[in-house]
Image 1 (cartoon, rainbow, N blue to C red):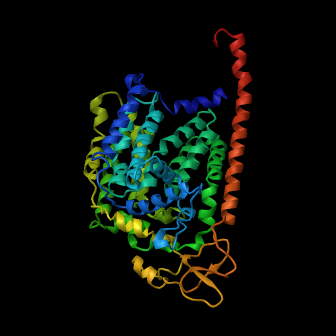
Image 2 (image 1 turned 90 degrees about the horizontal axis):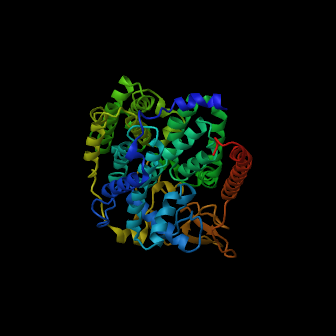
Image 3 (image 1 turned 60 degrees about the horizontal axis):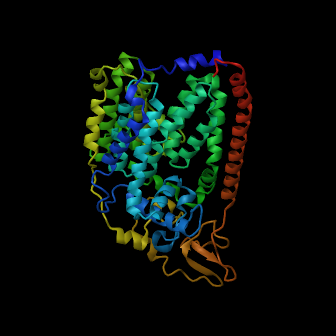
Length: 511
C-alpha cells in the first residue's frame, strides 16, 4: 500500500513552506465569513427584489416550509401553485436547498430573507470548503478560497440569475474534490465522497452532471489505479440520491418536459460563441467571465504547466462552444446552459492560483481579470420586482411542471389567467367529480380529465396524495445504500482498531 500511494502524494505537491497564519482556522473562518457577508448582504436584507429565478424560488420556498410545518417530511406536491391547481415540483426538482430555506423560515425569518440567507450559507460554505481543500497543500490557501467565493460566475449566479440551488451546489465542489483526493491517496474516502456527491445530486442535478463529466471523470482517469474505488463512491452517491432521482426520472411523462427548452436561450446551442447573441446582456456577461477565466489561467497553465490551471483553461474553451458537438452529446445537451460548468473552472483556477509562488507580484497578476469581472457582475444586470402580494395570492409556477397539453406545442408563454380560464370552474362530467386541481399519479384515486388535465374521479373516493411506485423504489434504494455505507464504516473501524492499538502498546516510537 505504501508503494502504491507514493505517486499520488507527489501529484499533490506541498507548498514551498508552511502557509503560517493562512492555515489557521481562527483566522480563515472569520475572514471568509466577513467576505461572504459583504458579498451577499451588502445592502442588508432590504426590500424584496425578486430578480432572475428568485420569483419562482419564492413560490417554492413558501410552500415547502408550509408543508414541512404541516408534518410532511418530504414535500413533493405543492398544493397552492397556479392558484390552487397544484404542481409536482419536488418530484422533479432537488429539495436540499429548500430544506435550508425552510429551516430559516421556521426559525422566524421571512420567506424572502430565508432565500437570501441560504445564498449567504452557500457563499460561506464555498469559501471555507475551498480553504480546507487547499490548506497545507498550497502557498495561498486563504486568498484562493476568497477568490473562489468572489469569482465572477459565482457572483453572477447570485446577483443576476438568483440560481439558489446551483449556488449551494457550487459550494459542494471542493467537498467532493476532498473526497476524491482521499480516495486517490489511498486514505479510504469512498463514504465521504458518496455523501458529498449524493448531496450535490440532491441539490442541483445539472451541476452534479457537469461535475461528474468535467471533474470527477478526469480526476479518476489521472488516478486510474484506484478507478474501482472511485466507481464505488459515485455509485453509492447515486444510490443515496435515489429517493429523489428515481421519481425525477421515472415520472417524467407526467409533466411538460419540453417547456424546459421552449425558447432558444434555454437550449445549449444559443450559448455558443458562434451564435453571436451579443444583444443579450447575459450572453455578453457570460463571455466576459469566460475571457477573464481564460486570461487568468494562461500564465499558470502555459508557464508553470499547472494541471489545475490547464483544466480551467481547457474547460473554459469547451464552454465557449468552440469545440464542435460537445454540447450536442446526450445528457450534456440537456443542461440548458453550458456556462454552468464555469463553477468548476473557477474552482480549478482557484486551486491553480493557490499553488503559485509566494511572491505577491506573481500571485496577483492572474487574478486581476476575474476580479475586475466580479466588480462588473456584482451590481447585477436586470432590475427585479417586488410583487409579493401576487405571489402570495396565486403562487404562479414554472411551465415545465404543468401537465402536457396545458401549454400548446410551439407556445412559449401563457398568463396564469389563460391557464385558469378553461379550467375554473371545472367542467361537468356525468357520473364523475372533477376537482379544481391538476391530475398526477400521486393521487390515491382518479384519472386525468382529457380536456383540462384536471383530476377526475368517482364520487365514492376521496383523493389524497400517496407515495408513487417511483418514490417507494427510490426510498428503498437510498435506505439500502445508507445501511451499506454504515456497515462499511463500522467494518472499517473494526479493521483499523487493532492495527492502531498494537504499536501504541509495543513501540515507543509510535507514542
